[in-house]
Image (cartoon, rainbow, N blue to C red; front, side, top):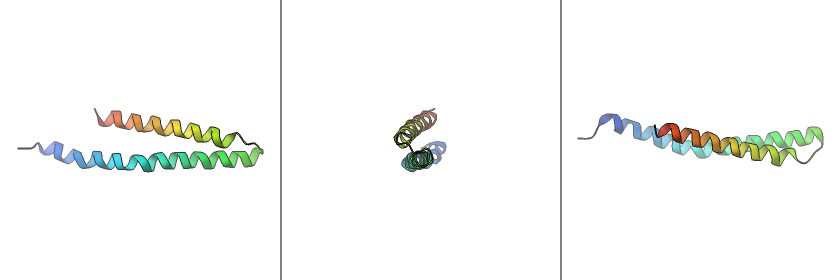
Length: 72
């Protein structure tokens, strides 16, 4: 007989996995928008790639942190 507690946890994990792409995409997109806005405000060209890369690292950190919490 299956453990009912495990059966209830499974859909929750799949929902978290499916939301990873949305979370990552939104973080990177918003970082790109912020970098583009900063470039426009200060008439520079380095903010957009810099802030976008920072957003990529932040999104990867959040994903790794979330996956580690799921495995506990």
